[in-house]
Image 1 (cartoon, rainbow over the protein chains, first blue to last red):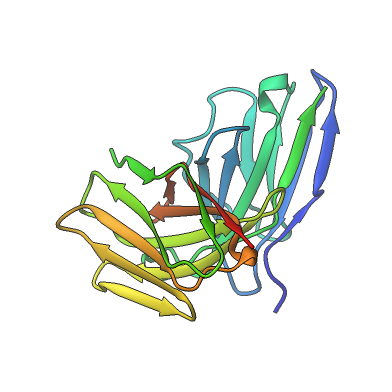
Image 2 (spheres, each protein chain N blue to C red; image 1 turned 60 degrees about the vertical axis):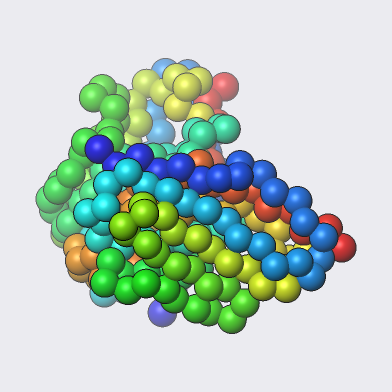
Length: 115
Length: 108
């Protein structure tokens, strides 16, 4: 059973471009969480999704950021018109159920650099 | 709102020493707690999961405890090794709220 997969592992974008980060959860997992780790800061929750639904986006910046988890395919975190402050490591995690007894399994992260 | 604090921010110990990492939280209504390690430039590796009804979990040289009444969790590492050098993070609740981490350096 492959772990959580994220791609690309490294992404370089110029200011104003769009960044698309992909996350494939572990097989059998229907819950996906996205986190951001800014340089010199801790990990911050961004958004929690189930298939075709956004459950909690309280940690997502109000503008330029969006996330989806379609019925088929990976979850996508999309950042429009990137700025230098978006440079960070973005992690996704998955779990089989939204239940406190289940661990979240993390992917290796995508490191976004905005030049 | 849950706030999570990890002390110390950095720790350097000689190889073989036993050590304790601390994590404190403000809201005792937690659901679960995970301890992670993060190696430089890498993703998170889950170390231990403690459910709110449990008091501790053990895996090899690691032991994590949870005391909801005092708002604390500790990660105990026995007989530390240079390979243990990493940043250790604790996290709470379903949508994990992370502490800032403790950067551990084990000197050979």
